[in-house]
Amino acid sequence: MSETKTNLLEAPFELSYKYKRSSGPVMSKFFEALGDKKILGTKSKAQKVFAPAAEFDPQTRETLTDLTEVGPGGVIESWSWVHQPSDHHLLQIPFAFALIKLDGADTAMLHMISGCQESDLSIGARVTATWSDTPTESITDIKHFTLEL
Amino acid sequence: MIQAGVIGVGQTNYDSKRRDVSMAGLVREAIDHAMLAADVDWDAIDAVVLGKAPDMFEGVVMPELYLADAIGAVGKPVLRVHTAGSVGGSTAVIAASHVCAGEFKTVLTVTFEKQSESNATWALSPRYPYSPHINAGAGGYFAPFIREYIRRYEAPEHIGWKVAAKDRQNALKNPLAHLQIPGIDEKMVSETPMLWEPLRYLESCPSSDGACAMVITSEEMVGSRKVAWINGMALRSEGTLSAGRDEVNPQAGIDCAKDIYQQAGIQNPRKEIDCAEIYVPFSWYEPMWLENLGFCELGEGWKLTDEGVTRLDGSLPVNMSGGVLSSNPIGASGMIRFGEAALQVMGLAEDHQVEDANIAMGHAYGGAAQFFAMWIVSSSKN
Image 1 (cartoon, rainbow over the protein chains, first blue to last red):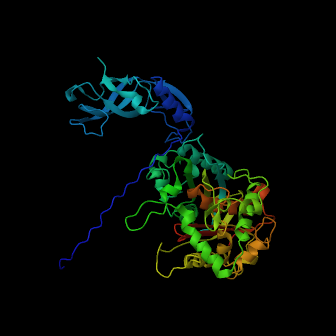
Image 2 (cartoon, rainbow over the protein chains, first blue to last red):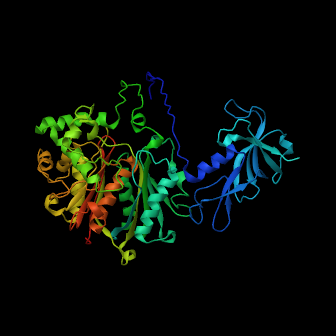
């Protein structure tokens, strides 16, 4: 094919909008509780506890409304170490993204583990929540998890 | 082909802000109503078909991922449909097609929009580098087509007001409808501000939260349940800016209607169809679609409206539920038309029931009046 003149159109295309979320009767309690330094899960009829709170049981399809407190301690199910955090990361020192099964829960939640070396981490190791001093009723009220001593 | 029927219709109430529920909770509310009406449990559902309008409306891209638990799709096939504003209708057709084809015996289908989480006019008005920014949304886009319809057929101004008042009067008989305006009449509509000339404020649809679901099953599974038999269904499309396209009377709409009439054995839609739920988000689309759907000759649609033919007590009631002009959770709006048509032939439309409704039409259009979805439901099989 012969070389043709390329005419690249370049123009800014910026979209932004502040979406609002209605968190509903279950998740709104989960977020409120975070402001009080508590983590809530939901319990199914078969006593299975979902944490963070879930509105529906994927298997039985039942609507979950029975809230129950879990954690703040739990065990590491898996992790991924971040050697060099980027600007967008919430922590600016090396940390781990981790799946943490909180005490009293049957499912794992995704959060961060900080204040340790990568070599300190292992599946099954115990961690506990470190709370923010300025709660905003959001998931970042848990600053991160820390290895239990 | 296997005969399919609707055995359950479920709707949420429609409101500007359903802040009491999450998106998942809203969708599930409609599903719970539909499954209760159909008297089926989750084991009976073979697949779930979800539809909604553009993802930018809520900013949740691919919501079927997040909603899989809420719609009971775990362990079942899930399909997601999108055809802009007509998606509620297209989703019903896709769901029913899988039953007719024998792929699934019973399908749960659900559509929704939670407009309170965003602003559809904003989402529909991105800045493109090759055109000046209009920020007019759907009303601004359709206003010139309406202007052209009025010019072609010398339609008087009050026709739009009449449709707007009639649909809101019907909404007063439907407790689920979003807009409830006691005392609504043509004068009230005519005194509201001009939004997108020639459309006034009350000639336009509201912005609503809501969801609609249906259970569609094959003939062998119906049993003793009430059923709306699906006797014809079709989809047609056009390009947004295709050269030579007639936006006032799109060929895709004409062809789609002819297809469903042929499937359902309808020779004269004006005489044989007892009532219709037609997608009318802006008042003038009632007469425009009456013509496009072959209920009358070109230029005669506004006269049917003017004569009161489309009133709840007329000979061809249109939008008995209050229509899109009274409730517009965009992604669900088409399915509400299809579901309300089903409720009519099942005799379950309560205060807005048309007496002896045996054959009803559900209709939806979307995009730049370029996607069409329609079905004919009946109290008797094809």
